[in-house]
Length: 158
Image 1 (cartoon, rainbow, N blue to C red):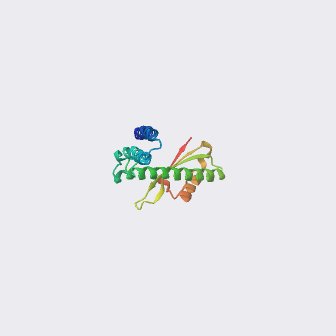
Image 2 (cartoon, rainbow, N blue to C red; image 1 turned 180 degrees about the vertical axis):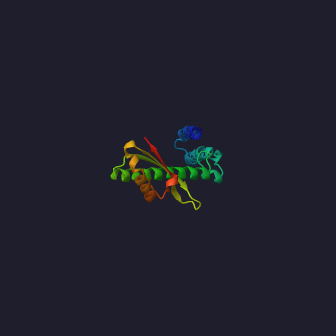
Image 3 (tube, rainbow, N blue to C red; image 1 turned 120 degrees about the vertical axis):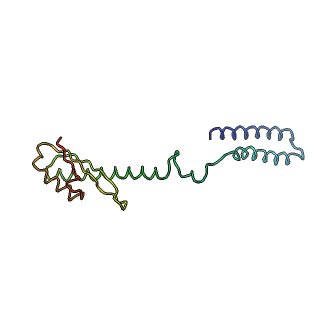
């Protein structure tokens, strides 16, 4: 792209210099108008001729980013959305647990079901030893808030 810009700039500059010399030579003669028209055409040619050499990629590649297919971009966007939703759910669960007096850290893994609907697939909770007696209450909170059954919950002591 930079090379194209340099080529256009060089050609327009040379055409401008040639046109100014031709106009200076023709001074007040009858050829002055013909020289002005020729100079304008030369400038237009100097500007447009390098643009004719530009080759655009095929239309099928227009929407691809750096050789990445549309399916890969969609998969990357889906993973980003899953991470963001999982982190938001984990924050809410940590806040709800803190309200009940349980100090824990939550990680929520998201997945899509057969219909493509995003859902909480697995929940990992890191709890303190002092909250070990309240694990049942914590599991019930996870089941109610996320809809994740106890078999997909992992409770790990910090």
